[in-house]
Image (cartoon, rainbow, N blue to C red):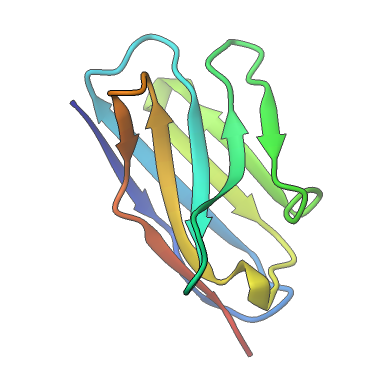
Length: 118
C-alpha cells in the first residue's frame, strides 16, 4: 500500500501563488511516476502535471498551466510539489496527487482545495 498526503491548498487572489506538497509513504519502488490532477465543480478530473519514473524527471503539463505551474520532486523525501504562479479563477479545484504504479496499484491522495477568488 501507498499513502499520499497533500497539503498547501487555500484561498488566493487572482495573480497570486501557491505551492502544493504531496508526501508519499508505504511500499514505494525506487523510482516511480507522480502526478497532479484537479477536479473543478461539475467537471471531470484532469491531468495538471506529471513527472516520469526516470532519473531524467521528464515532465508533462496541461496546456492551460504551461508557463505558470512547475512540478518538482524531492526523491530523498518522497515528496512532490506543484508551484503555481499567476493563478486564475479557472484554476479553482480540488488538487489530487497520484502515483500510478500499475493499473491495479493506482494511488490517490484525498485532495487539497485551491480557491482563486478576489
